[in-house]
Length: 218
Ligand SMILES: C[S@@+](CC[C@H](N)C(=O)[O-])C[C@H]1O[C@@H](n2cnc3c(N)ncnc32)[C@H](O)[C@@H]1O
Image (cartoon, rainbow, N blue to C red):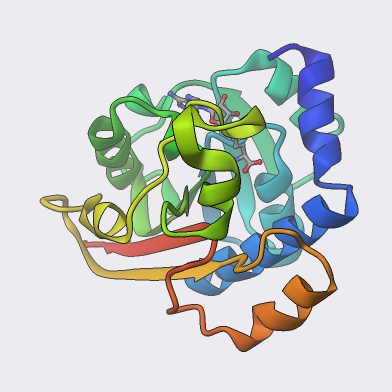
């Protein structure tokens, strides 16, 4: 991505639909994360830092965004406020010591990563408490609109997880209490979508956004 493309990506979160989707996704992530102020959080595949920033500002955590894309990091860091920092790197080999972070998130990034197994091993290695993944849901309206046939626009090349795949991501790794939730039931973001969203239980796994949380075993 170049800087203009990264700015366009970030600007999407300021459109009415993007702002609504971002809010709904963040609300679910924050609920599952249950972070305490002052904890250290890693955001893997942080892109332009939308979730890193929100975690720092709204949850009071010290947030580190990690991404291999210098242009995305440049946009994320303009300006990085106290409580957030950005590091260039890849999830397959995280440049952090074991158990460096209390909590880790990874939002719509795993779906673009070829070696998901290695990515999860690394996330588990650097995390002390809880990991929350944000994934694209194959059993969703958004998949029918944007995901089929290799995907369109920003979704091109993304892997859309099934519920079963999502639940099996952590299989064999030292985690327990795996939970799966979903959000963004009608991805249009219009008036009907906004009315329906709070009425559908987050256990109903048909939202465009699948969130999987797991606790790392001490
Ligand atoms: C769709 S963007 C999501 C960005 C951000 N999490 C968000 O939700 O706005 C996917 C991000 O994953 C990053 N990514 C791709 N491969 C990666 C890897 N091997 N390790 C870490 N991040 C990676 C990309 O550079 C990109 O910024």
